[in-house]
Each structure stands twice: as structure tokens, then as C-alpha cells.
Length: 302
Image 1: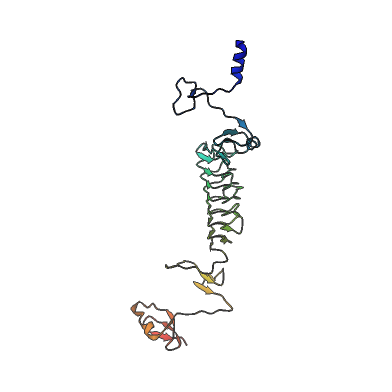
Image 2: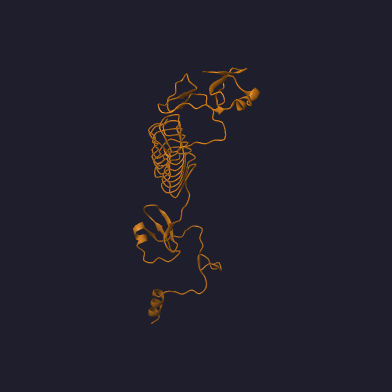
């Protein structure tokens, strides 16, 4: 009879009205269960993602360890399963939520934060990717910075001289840059028209750089560029042309518009005073003349 009672006790749930200690005879008063060990850990249920999601009406706080897909500890928050993200390190590089499968200790000083961020890096150095799929394809070159979902997603190198020193900030920024270097993309959707541009800059939503060593401000909807300062250049400025003559400081090309000089009365012209530089051109609305300053006097040009 006593064996039957013992068998029933072993097969029935046990209710503990105080604390339970495993490895300790004095569990903490705030803990329903305390595990204490110096040579063993706690092993939660291990299952695949499909098995985890098949759990019917999981309790809030339920925890399992997933063995496929994005590996790791998952907890149910009452409405969905949350991956308990951890930092993974290899050498001097750090990643979250998972370490790239091909990363080696030769990949130095990298930082990847976000699902699939820097997911393919193997030996590349000093890359920073923040955002899901940022710099996802990069393998071996370095000094790239990508911030935003899908930023520099396609950047990958076939040699040590490609795909380096690029900066992209914004969702989908620099998506078309594959082998280009020294490029800057600022703004959601800012990009390059070619896959291998060098020293190109695109600033603004949807701005697209189209050639090496150029800056594109804004997309095709931008109609004005305003500044309260001074724009300076040591090269040639072209209006209506992308290739001004190298002998010209300014070249204006148009078949529908002319050059409109500053329009001043004689009184306004003379008020410029001693600071008037030789060669200054105006249209005098009093005399109805185009005039130039010689350095000592104003003269009519027609």
C-alpha cells in the first residue's frame, strides 16, 4: 500500500506555497524558484521556430530557446514572441542580434545592429551598419557607414580598392551603390545612378548622383536652392550646361532665356561708392544703358 501512495505522489502535481530552491536550501524570499550552481546552467525547452509558433495560447513570460532561423532565447510578451537580443562578438567586431556566419577574427572593429546588418562580412574592417539589412552584402572591404533600413544594401567588393569609405544615412540610401567608393548619400532614397561612382554626393530625399566627383542637391521636384551665404568655386560654373568651357568662369547656355543684369538708377549706382570694383556691370534704368565701371568712372557699353 505504501508503494502505491508513493507512486501516486510522484505522478501528481506538487504545490509549493513558499519558495523552491535547487542547489540551495535557502532560496531568496522574492523568488518562487531559485537555481544555484557553479558548474551547471538553466536549460529551457529547445525547439524550432515552427514548433514555437505552434504553442497554443502561450502564457505571458513563457520562454523557449529557438534552434533554427534567428537563434536564441525568445519570450512571449502577451501578444507576440520577442527575441531576447544579445551582443555577439568575434575579435574586435560586435553584432546584434546575430553574428554573420562568415565573420572571422580578421574582421576588425565592425559594428552591426539590426536584422541581417553586416550579415555577409568576413574580413572587412571598420564598417558600421545600423538598421535591418544595412550593408547586408558587404564582405571584405571597410570604412563604410550605413544608417537606416536597407542602406548600402548592395555594396560589395571584388577587390580591395572597391566599395570603401561610403556613407549612407536614410532608408534605402545608397541602394544602387555596389562597387563605388568615397560616396555620400544623405536622405531617404538618396542614391547613385551607376553602381561604381567615385566621390559622388547625393543630398535630399530621392536625390540621385549621376557622375563621379559631383554633388546632387535634391530630386527632380526641387526648384529652388536658397542660401544666405556665399557660394564659391575654383572651377567653372555652368548654367544650362553640365560641362562649362574650362576657359570660362561662368558659361550660360540657353535658347529661350537671356542674361538679366542688376537694374539700378543712377542714384542707386552712385551709392555703391568707393567699394565699386573695376569691371562691375549694371543696367542703368535712368539712362537705359548697360554700364561698366572702369575703376574710376562709369561708362556706357552701347
